[in-house]
Image (cartoon, rainbow, N blue to C red; front, side, top):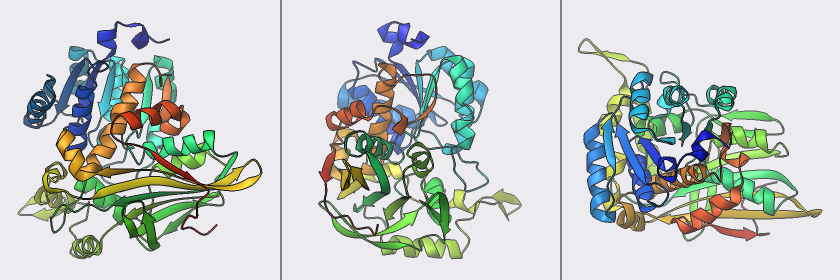
Length: 413
């Protein structure tokens, strides 16, 4: 039992949310909607006005008051000071992946638990891996603190899905395909559904997948095929490298192959190709009027902000895991997924489904941590914890889970 679990209920349920973009807004809304657990909420970001707007929305829609603050998450001392002034039990980091390590350092210094939705990546290299954060394991253990990594949907719920499949449906898992479709329409010529910098860096780097004990690297977007998504139909899907693959193949070593697929419309790909060809996706500085400007950061400034897309968004997302393995000596296939409707999420929390499917699992992970269900010292990925209470909360919190056993899957084995 740690100090956090021994504290009174009010203190135990105080949470600090850092980040006021589309995901941060959903996390704040959903925490407020679960006010018996999250009795005090502080939302902080570099721009306090964004936090104030979200707080006003939450007050109007749910009748719950939350606090707001300004903080520069790159500055450890600022984060430490904010933590000490508010005294939360947990920091929910939904800021930028570049800021994971400073916020983890602040949590260690201030003595509070930590969670995020995306793994660390350095600002000057389009590379994301868990090594930087896994290196904190011993320090969090020694401090009696927990850090939960990548608790969004993918990563996050997809790892819970895989752990749930392993626990209930397989003696051995051999093949894993994570399939992610956004079949929504926001009416914009070109926009990204989450932070444009992170989104474009992610999909323009070479693809990778795991096969027979090694990583296979491929040119970006070079492997693709139609995959049939429930209630949506066939959509062209592309193999990308996605961070949860790194921890899943580590924690489920029987996997012979693990891949991540995501859908993209042709108009999106055409825009992206043009932007790449003219240098707008570069992450190295260029001189303009005597100033250093990073083209991708400038592009982010002129694209629609993801948290403004929700109002007229229609259609659904569909994200799940398709697995083949063995149960009781017999081959088995298994598909577990969630579909989420853009218009419904806007009515509930004024957000679009991509933000919702990340923000709701973040709130669930936080709930399981502060109530002691998922609470042990160290640094953990979602699949290393009991999946059952997480699935139970998904069904209660607006992300119902579907599953089918022994159906044909669209993959070669």
